[in-house]
Length: 130
Image (cartoon, rainbow, N blue to C red):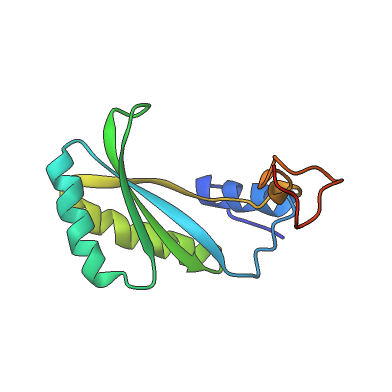
């Protein structure tokens, strides 16, 4: 697969190289950053009414020293769709003195469920009482 030679294209190429199926819908997290907590909260409130299909989360990023609003949308990660969504969200964030700060996806790793119940070993059955 060929991708444009920019940050979004490089991210999609890395995802494809990692074995992620880019033809399937994934939860794509878009990051919006704000210097002021009130601006981030106002943006969150405005998005809450307009993004019913997505999930929203707000937190303070110690690394950035800014408030971060994460907009998680289930979508097929196509280049044009990612660019369009980033542009839309950047324009939206600018209304609240914020801006976009990239995007990403959480990849399910083989064996993630292996540690879900670390108290139980292979010898245990459903009646085990650890």
